[in-house]
Image 1 (cartoon, rainbow, N blue to C red):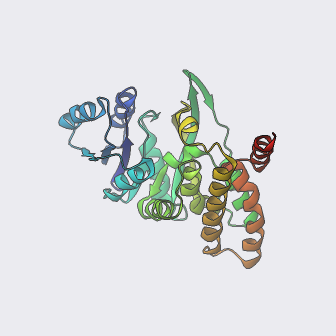
Image 2: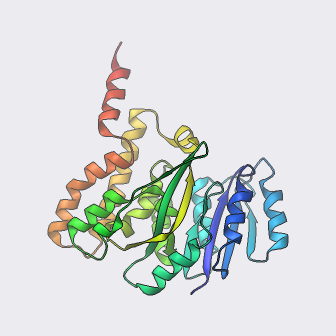
Length: 283
C-alpha cells in the first residue's frame, strides 16, 4: 500500500488532541506521515504535539505565525503532503485501529474510486449514534440517478475519509479560491467526487465524529443577506464542477435544477431564510 499522508489542522485543540493522535498511532497500517499545522493556538496545543513529535518521527509540525483561517489551514497541511493517498483528521475525532488499512485497500483495489469512506458514528456527550449509510445502492453504477443517490447518501464525515491526494488538492484549491465562507465548505470538498459516483465504502471499520456545535455557533450565517450570498456561491461552484464532468448533456441540465434542492439542504434551507427575512421586516 502507498504512503498515506494525514493532515491535522489545529487550533486550541488541547482538550482532545491526545485521543486523536493516539488513535492514529495505533493504526495497523504504519506507513504514514502526520502533518500538523498549529494555527497560532492560544492554549497548550503546540506543546502537546511537540511532545508527540519528539517520540515519533512520522509526525511533522508547522506553526503558523498568525491565524490564517480554518480552510486555508486545511489547505496548508495538504500542500505539505507527499503520499499518494491523503486524509484529513480533526483534533476531536478518532477511528478504529484498522481505518487506514481498510480504506487504503479499497483505493488500491479499485481505480474507479477517488475517495474511500467508512461507517460514521456521531458522538455527542459520550453518546454514540451510528449513521446508516447504504452506499451499495449507488455503488458501481455511473448513471445520473446513481449520482443523485450518492449525493443524498453523502455525509460530512466522509470528508475525513481517504482521498487520492490530487483529487483532494484540486477540490480544496477551488474552495479556497472561490468560496469565502466556512459553513458548508465540507460538502463542496466532497461534491466533485460524490457527484461523479467515485466513492467506495468499507463496512469493516468506523470513523467517530464528535459533535460539539462549535462550527454551528461560530460559522453559520445568521442574516438572510449572508445566507443568500453563501447559497449562491455554493450553487455556482457545484454547477461549474458538474458541467466540467463527462456526464451527458441531459444529465447536466437535470443537475442544474437538482442543485437548487441540494444547495438548500447543505447550506441554509431556503424556507428558513425566507422566514427570517420576513420576521426582520416586521415593525
